[in-house]
Length: 284
Image (cartoon, rainbow, N blue to C red; front, side, top):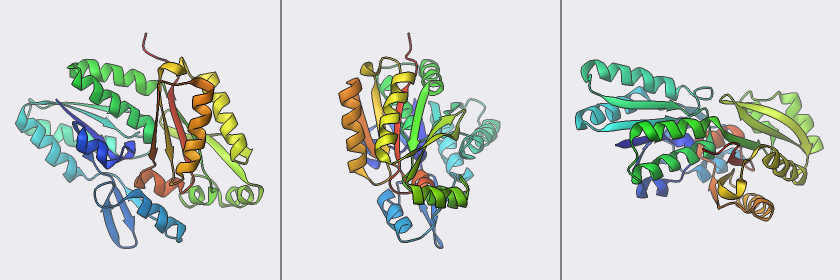
């Protein structure tokens, strides 16, 4: 069995080098140059460009990438599972479905399950890691897909951004809101709802945001001490470690993973962003 994931899962290159998961890179455009996320550009390079005033653009994985991978899968006779970035945030999932159907015309025996995770960043990354873990245990594609769909449905994402200007550039918030937010040190708190990034509330300063994240984890999380919780950051590891210490002191989770937010999502949310990911329901 082969597992596929795209780079919006924000797992580092080292993960794909040491685990049986095939990376499908999304694309980043800076000035006139196109890069393959993770493969030919590092997210820290993207944050450096943003800090210098550049506005990187992003685009989905190409149909050609999927065609090559899916034809290879069909010819190998293996089963495949592609866990995709939320279809509400990228066209990558829909392109993959289209190419799978096209390949099946030539290779009717192609066995490829595609899951729209409706997740982003490490909310998505936790699903990929779980699928790889289950594969190593010898679980079937059907069983892995069942578990991943359940976990995707119950994945919580809590995000805050350092500077609303970055989201204003991408049309996520109005320019007026960004200006006022900057003057008042207002930090928005957002979550993912049905695959979309949705604002919850606005708070003044990081400390209040972090405290509110803990409150929401308490309200929404189930048996957090049994979970692996993930934290992603926009090139601000100290912020992530501070959040990690607060979560550990409050909930004592089994494990906490910290990774930098990748180039594609980072291009839209900017440096200083923080995301926390956990489950609101565990399998019985």
